[in-house]
Length: 362
Ligand code: ZN
Ligand code: ZN
Ligand code: ZN
Image (cartoon, rainbow, N blue to C red; front, side, top):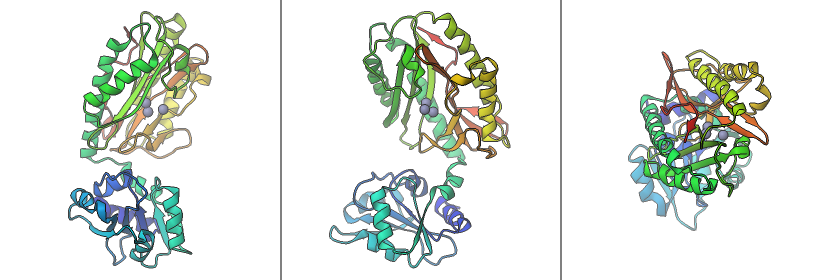
């Protein structure tokens, strides 16, 4: 059964009559159309199963050839001309629903214009229903994540050659961005190069600070492959030997990350993956310095469900893909994170990244 049909069943189960899906990861997932979100309305009208209407893609006339090339014959396309009102058109195609769902990434302007075109119709978020599909990757999606992992591994393999005393974080990051494209990604999603005290800020933006000998360097990088699937991996580097206090907690972090990956298997709650890492770091006295959740789902988006975080009692299932990335951050000194993408399989966690996790001394 194709993804649109499964989504229509999920909508019916969720009590939603129609979903309206604008350009973004849900549209790509459902009909393989990688449209750029622009001001003109492009929108998949997806009725729940049990309704007599069938899915249609509303698209501006000038984008119809591109849309047709992507979706093929899988869904009808209804075009609108520059002077027509696409919101009124979309409302007519919805029939008379009690509730419509909009995708989680739809622009607020479009949400509000759709609301105005369908007065009295309840609007809800489509994400809750669609995540049930997107969270469970099929073999082709797992293969795409494995390909993304291998690509970002090739970038990490080149990082040592870029780290020389006197270069700035920004210079290193620019070289890494070029490598991310060289190895086959079509988009650079982010490049974190955080030297010394900057490493204590988990989402540090590369700056003009120099990388210096004896300072741990956090390198967290990711991009999007032609398949649409994302990579995301963190490794730690140091020019020369790291400080003794760093070496002590890095051993703790490595053990915690290994234990959390080893805990992955069907039936284990997402929050338990977080707890395994947190217990190991807490037992060594660094609990206060592990300031974020252990991981996030990954697929057509770098951050998606399921999240490895306290309070998420969702049980892991085969096909669920997510990062395992505990960190320890000492403000004013330095920080460390180790991150792999892991896919839950019947026999445990399959790791998509194969670079050594030990500190890479350059
Ligand atoms: Zn992050
Ligand atoms: Zn991540
Ligand atoms: Zn990352």
